Amino acid sequence: MSVIQSIPPKATEDRKKITTRLIQAMKTHHEPICMLTAYDYPTALVMDQAGLDIILVGDSLGMVELGYESTLPVTMDEMIHHSKAVARGAKYALLVGDMPFLSYQVSTTEAVRNAGRFLQEAGMNAVKLEGGSERAEAIRAIVGAGIPVMGHLGLTPQSVHKLGGFRPQGRDAEAAYKLVEDAQVLQEAGCFSLVLESIPGRLAELVSQRLEIPTIGIGAGVGCDGQVLVTHDLLGLFERFTPKFVKQYANLSGEMKRAFSEYKADVKANAFPGPEHTVEMNDDEWHNLEQRLAQTSPIFIIHDPSMR
Ligand code: KIV
Image 1 (cartoon, rainbow, N blue to C red):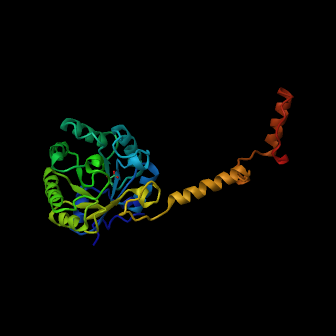
Image 2: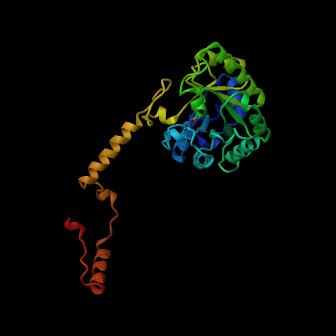
Image 3: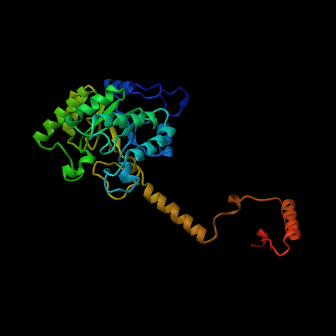
């Protein structure tokens, strides 16, 4: 039975806000957790209407929305700006703000302060950060300040240069063992859930079974407790590259190109706007205007729309 059966996606009035406790209960009841990324108000609104459990304002923002080559240039201020827009759109999903590169690695104090900004300024309910045991201290401090933390292991895009590219992780026994250990450390440090990105399916399943907290997979198979995708990948809106693990549910780039081309053709052919898109003025008022203009500025020639 669904843990959130009392939350039908459309009947918004009697829906409950999703909390970290509900997310934990979903694992207990074997109900898959459904998460997507969003970076703006209209997308967050539609996701909330569709009944998504978690919305992540991912630092993938940098690549799919801001056009950077990686997530590294994304700043705290950019994340806060987009998180605020998402929070205005989504009232029910659990909202997670992704801590950008260098916002939590330099010192524990900075990590807590930056995590706090996501809740205090941007209306997020939790934060996410990347890395294993080397992040345990920062996680403990952030959780200690009352801020729920989602961990992120496997392919951690902020370490793209250290990893030698956007490549699958944990494929040999040593790396897989380290990942199992790191997952345990993150749980003990207080994470309420864990993203597992681009690791072998059976490793993700093993980690999910060993942990009490839910795992959320991206390119990690069906054995995780939930799934996440970058929304632009799912919608076919990011054409630079599409990871193998993405299932494309729409082709919005194609649809947008069609709409923009049709609009251009209409404008060039004077076929838009039509009368139905144009505000009219009644004839009496129009003649009044003509008379007044003729008196005050006799050389002014009024364009008569009926002569077009
Ligand atoms: O930034 C992001 O979108 C992410 C997801 C891929 C989990 O971290």
